[in-house]
Image (cartoon, rainbow, N blue to C red; front, side):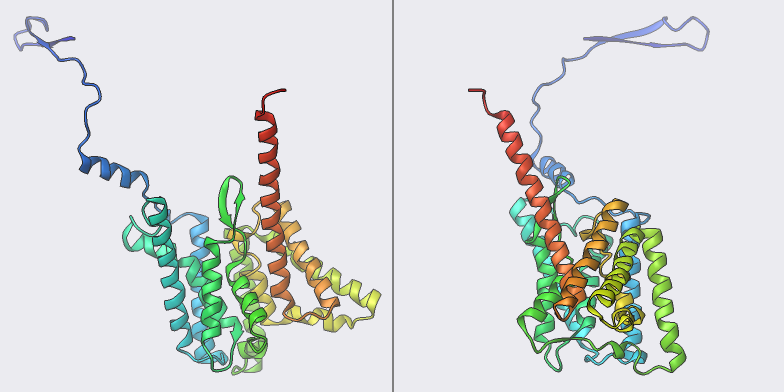
Length: 348
């Protein structure tokens, strides 16, 4: 291949007066790439994407984490949390450490870069946000008297199950069990002497006027968070609406006290569950109709469990609905796989 370069002179004699012809070699084929460059390219290809600070999912997680942190600080200093003040730190050490260990094992198994690596402190921070929220929620909502190890086990189950209980959701293997809810549920099932944190301890040491203000603040903050960032308002409407309906049905059919059936809605625990647990973005649908159906399902299962006098109903209802959602996605994958197998089989 030849190339001719022309240079115009300053005396106006035209651009072709001075020219040169250079013969270039043909392009090389299959040029070997140095191992160091190839390794760098492989690391770049498997490098986790950087989380955008404007991503609504990140903003939701960040605000969730901030809300949980503030509520825990106020809980141990003002409100009257009864667990030892050091337990959140122990729980965070276990939960965050386990999350990093799982990421390292997954990276080793897939020969890829750990999910928290590649973007410095920012990458570690964004990666650990879900485990941070799960750990604080489990520690805050469980009460095991003076024994910490059941809380630690609940944290391990809640964080660790995300690597085990997965389903093929929209082409990706994703966890389907609500982490903090599942950890709490398993702890309650395994240890009958462990209880949910008493509802009064959320407002135990504050004047009466603040006992009214606290639920209002939680309701306002949670509503704004779910309306603007997580977009889970349809789910909340389905859940709260069905909660009211099941209370009315139980009152009319089984003569259950209507006030007793509706009074849980006035408590701080119900507000925390509604705005910060059942709306978990990672384990709930994204489409508004599917969100509404998910919330309705939780309310329906809650009513059935209440009719059978089963305690810890909020947590068990969420666990059963999440389990059903995971089973649905596995059945859907199995059916589509069977259809593809039949379509690919040669006609006999």
